[in-house]
Image 1 (cartoon, one colour):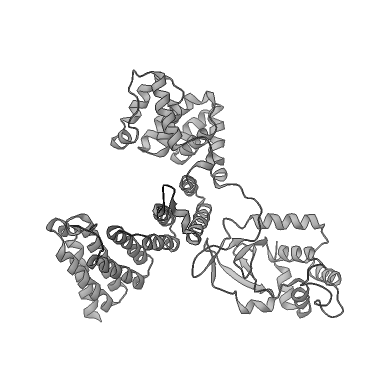
Image 2 (image 1 turned 45 degrees about the vertical axis):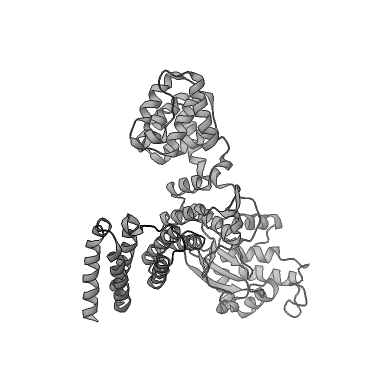
Amino acid sequence: MTDDALRLLQENARLAELAAFSFNFDIDRAAHGHVEEVRLASGGPLVIVAGDDTGGTYFVCADGSLLYADSEGSAGIIGCSVDEALEIMIGLAEDEDEKVDEEESLPGRGLEDARAELRAALGFPERPRAELEALLHAALLRTEPDFVLLNGMEHNAYELLDSYPRPPLWESVLASGRTDLARLREGDREAWDSVVRDPVRRRLALRAAQFDRAEGDLELLRHLLRHEAAASMTDELRLAAVLVGLRGDTGDLPLLNEVRETDFDTACGLGGMPEPGAGADELVTWARELDDSLFGADPADEPLSTWTDLARDQGMTELARVTLIRELDEIVMDQSRLRRPDAPRTLATAPLRALARDFEELGDRTQALRAQRLYTALQEKAWDRISALLDQARLEREDGQPAQAIRSLEALRSVLVAPGDDSLHQWQRVNFGRFIAEEHYRLAHALADANLPDEARALLTAADAILGKLSENAANGVRELAEETAARVREISEIS
């Protein structure tokens, strides 16, 4: 669809006034901007074209869709174009709405008169209300994953405008795996070759088989198991072994043990597997125990990371990103979600660290830093705080935030001086000390490259002091980087 209606409003003051007073779409408010800085999680452009009298804002997205954001932190797509959104707004406005009655419309104009005049002028047909509601419903459901709005400062996501149910993440992720599994079951020889050669399709087919356990799958499970072993130790390799083992066919024990002995990682990951010659009961018991503890038959019970990883690997980047952002938002708003059931006064911060890694793998350092900074703030032991600060400083350096990275390393050095516990005992003698020195030198080098000689020299001095405390073995691993950094800092100092 086109945006001819927006052009007509911009060219015709009378029509613009009708749209503003009767339907709360005021193009003059576009100049006011939104109530706060915002951006799309997907990174696409946003152009403000109108506002309303409640502080809400209308944005045009890259594909022409119209995104509405209210002033309370909710947002959603309300039309695939400005034309469609206006047609929906004009058609669905009601006289009972206290904000739109005859007194608030233009003098002498009732809502129905305003509706009729705008429809005629903008070229909108008179559609049944149910049809317009269906258009709005479809538009709102398009908000996720590509049009999720973020606060530009805090980087949390706006809530959805609607409460329509969405399919769970696992359903979208598993769709192609279920299709491949059906083809494998049909004996499609092309699928038997193409699926096993594609690591992602193979993993998805195994996940589909996990939740749809058919008696006749044993041969295709063996086929998938043999080929998954080529990827070394994966969760799906263990899953394939479990699904084969649950059948209790002792003739599969040589295959299972061959897979286990693929390499060192598989030998460790599949430890405890019955040896050839074991009975069917022993094989089933081994498989069932692993199934109960690690897998199961309900996709809703799988860790979120299972589905976000598979979404990312299928190229569903925005679906994975939005799911992870909303997960992080919930933790930020309610840290009690991190409480350990067996120790309610203790927070299990590993989910935050996992989120930081997931975001980094997606290339989203902004969200990775958001998760990492909270993770760092919740660490109690000195060793853990320093380890978290190292990752935080690295992310800040890689994200082009040198001032923040400098502060993170300053905080790290403060912990070294006053750790508050004995967890840092002999940090100078192990690789931990080397990693601390390395990040200082890397940041000093980056500061020099950014033409910040004073900051580079100060950090180089701190790095050299740390290097001087390391054992000979730990120091040897960082000397080359130290020399390169010192040379770069001297070079920029001479220029300045």
